[in-house]
Amino acid sequence: MKSWQLMLRLMRYRPALYGFGVFVWSIFFMWPLLPGLINRAIFDQLSGAAPAVFGIWTLVALLVTSELSRRLLTQLGTAMDIAVQYNIAGLLRKNMLKRILAQPGAQALYESSSAAINSFRDDVEEILTFSVWLLDVLGHVLFSVIAVGILLNIDLRITLVILIPLLIVVSAFTVANQRIQRFRKASRAATSNVSNFLGELFGSIQTIKVANAESAVVAHFQQLNDQRRQVMVNDRVFTALLNSVYANTISLGTGMILLLAGEAMRNGNFSVGDFSLFVYYFAMVTRLPSLIGLLLTHSKQAGVSFQRMQALLNEDPAAALVEHGPIAPNSPADFGPTSVLPRLQRLAVQDLSYCYPQSQAGVQAINFSIEQGQFVVITGKVGSGKTTLVRALLGLLPASGRLLWNDQPIINPAEQCIPPNCAYTPQVPRLFSGSLHENMSLGLTIAEIQRAQAIKTSMLETDLASMPAGLDTELGTRGVRLSGGQLQRTALARMLVRPSQLMVVDDCSSALDAPTERQLWQGLRQLSSTWLVVSHRRALLQLADWVIVLDAGRIAAQGRLADLLQTSPVMQQLWQIEARSEVV
Image (cartoon, rainbow, N blue to C red; front, side, top):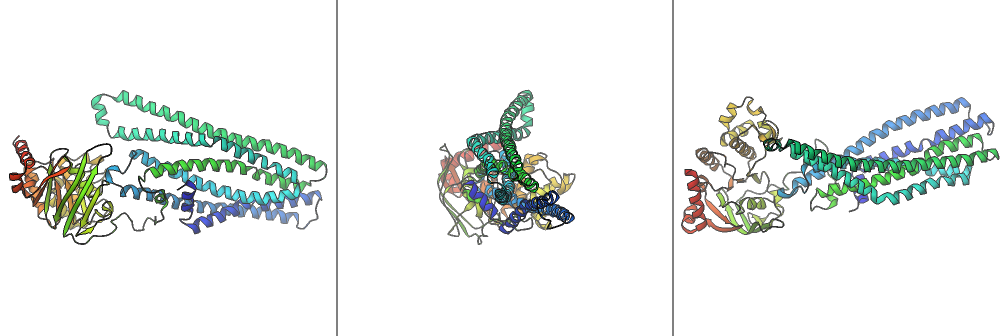
């Protein structure tokens, strides 16, 4: 979908609002036609070139009223601009965020988070700038068409000179088109490089300090800034050069027209009123080529911004960027599951496969089933594909195969395998810079009894009692103030306050000592949910109703633990390795 098609879809998002804005600004820009005619009548009366239709003071009153009306239109047009920009910006940002959240988790962003933030800010602002310029140019076109029609009645030859600057501007833009796009892409890329490095820098301060690499890091940061300054200067200088071409072309045209007008007045073909009308209109008409040139420049820059925003959508079509939907702060969010699935009786995984790009690693031909209420453990050596399996099952990786919920296929696991259908705690859980309560609720309203039960089941009560502010204790960036075990149990509590039918946990108790881990899972095992757990710990394997053993991305064996210890060499080896590690 081309940029102009995307822009058209944005305008049609709130057609009444945008249409009213077009109407208001069109009236605003055509309004100077009236004071121009009033000035002409005043000068013609003063010079005696035309009979008096209105008195001088009446014309002056009309002129003052016209100016006051124009100021009122300015206020109304500004309000329309704010409303239109709010809707366009809100729609673009909501759609980008919605598509990012709906994409497979491991490949949600091909660019860094800092680059994505730049798109949410700078690229959206570029689209808004283009939308404003579009209204301005449309109003000027309407004014210019009417004004040129009036001027043609005054003098055909002089009026045609107005077209010369327009032709020069359009020609200059045609020549500069490719360079505009190249400079803008380079400036945005350089800005992203600086933002990306800052994001990595703030997340790696400890590593930099330990390596004593502050000087090298600062030098590299300076180099990135120098590169950004160079390309930004090139972009700004070229834009200023184009603006100077527009301005100087108009100045040249103004001089030529004034010479011709002076000759016409000397020959008696111009009245003083005609001259004042011509000068008044020409000052605005000659702005049109410059505005058109700037609009064309902004259109190319907006095209670059659309391309950058589309890159965040991954495989989604460009139309998803401008998909219409509610954006009001109090409107219901549409990020939830497409449907709440019926009570889980049986989950079947058939021929599930996923291979990482440019690699043979992944999982292949995975087949197993889980019955309601079962506690199933996936185990295997490091690199056997355990994490890949659960992420593919939940739709966090674009896997092939089928997922059957009560014998009914799940069409889009990424949108359906979320609470209250499925809940997931990853191997390395992420916490946010907020309080313990905020990290558990993530904005949801949670009943106190439900929260208390989650804290008790995840064995956080003792830790909570030692925290200075209780649930309001700030955890720091990514939960830095918590120990590894506290972080894992906080993530489990966050999952427990969203009761789901299938609870998926990826080795999320590895930081706990063996007795605490055993007690934790004995409590979790008593819950009525169905569990799919990744672990190699013997305490969990002994609790399992069913064990799935992975080896090199395939299921090597599955069954009850006692049977596997008799029949599966891979399981026997894992069991012995884990027994030795627990003794140590």
